[in-house]
Structures are given as structure tokens and as C-alpha cells.
Length: 267
Image 1 (cartoon, rainbow, N blue to C red):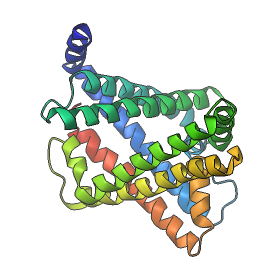
Image 2: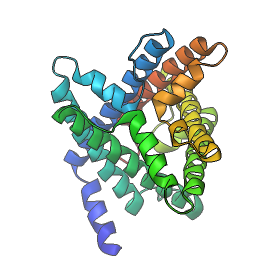
Image 3: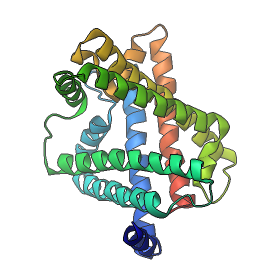
């Protein structure tokens, strides 16, 4: 443990590391801007619009220079994995032990998220991907349901996702995102951060709800990722308007990442 902390401290002091983290956060921004744009296209009835993480990456691959950008995004997101590992070992020392441990636990979850997205970006850059997006979500839930107590596990995953979503909404409403910054956001940055965290929290909560419903109904096909969640919103009364609002909000989360890249306290 001591060796890990010493290594993390050395990495944290590297200028190359700090620049790489900022590049990674900008990459994360681009992914959310694309998801927001695809959500709006989905709301307007465009067929084939896949407003998921993997859908955003595939959309990027279609454009000139997209493959090169995907490599940059993939490497940048994997750098964020290193960033969160450093945070687990030496981050958040300014907080009391209980809060510090909560934040380090959140960093561990982000290791998984950034790692998944980084690998997905590189796979997309390498060529047509298989088993991504909604099919992957259904495959995961089907696999889990096939093991002992798997149905309970799928439900628990859904509840954890909902808990994370509620935390995002809370961070937006109470402006707790400022804990991650070396300054306090005002003006446009503040509103991007608030709207972005709330919108992303709502969308992720629907994803968690789909997993819970899959567990209750014992039907893996009811599980899904972000695209399925946004389609569920679209199918509700006034769903088109709600989905456009969510799409704009997710785009705001992407813009918040620009401010995060500039003012990240632990980068």
C-alpha cells in the first residue's frame, strides 16, 4: 500500500500526466456532446440514431479524421483510468475520512467507466465492433440471470446505478461538483454543470430502472443502456420534448467537462 501511494505521488507530480488528464476530460466531453446530439436526433424521429456511448463513438468514426480522433479519445479515456487510480491512493486528503472514503469509492467506479469507454473507443477505431451497445447490456443481464441468484444480482446492479444517478442529480442541485474543482464555477460554467449533472442523472436513473425491471420481470431483453433509456423517455407522453431537454442537458454535461478539464483539483 505504501509503495502504491509513493508511486501515485510521483505520477501526480508529472506535467505530462496532468496534460494527459486534461486531454482525457476533453475526450469525455466530446462523447457527451455526441450523445446529446444523437438524443435530439432520436427525439426528432431520425431512424438509426443510437444515443449510447458506443453509438456516439460509431457516429464519430463515420466522419473524416474520425478514426484518428477515436484513438486520441481512447487513449485519453484510459489516461483517466490512471487519474482515478491516483485519486484512490492519494486523492481527497482535504476531506474528513468518511467523505474521503466515499469519494475514493466513486473514483473506483469511474475506473470501470473510463476503462470501458476507452477500450470501446479503441475497438471502434480498429473496425466494426461486435456485441456493443444495447445487445451488450442484454447479454450481460442474460448471463447474470443464468447464474445462481443472478436475478437478484441484476436487480442490485440496477439499484446501484439508480443510486449513482441520484448522486449526480444531488451534485447538480447542491453544486457539489465544485468539490472537484480548484475554483467555484459561476456564470455559464455553473449552469452547464448544474443542468448537465441533473440531466445525466435522470438518464442514468432510467438505465438503472430498466435493469431493475428486467430483474422483476425475469426478462433480460428489458435491460438496456443509454439508448434504450432515452427511447423509453421518447415513448412517454410529451416524450419528444422531454428527450430534447435531456439531450440538451447531456450536452451541457459535456460542456461542463471543458471547465472540469481546466479546473480539476486533483489533476
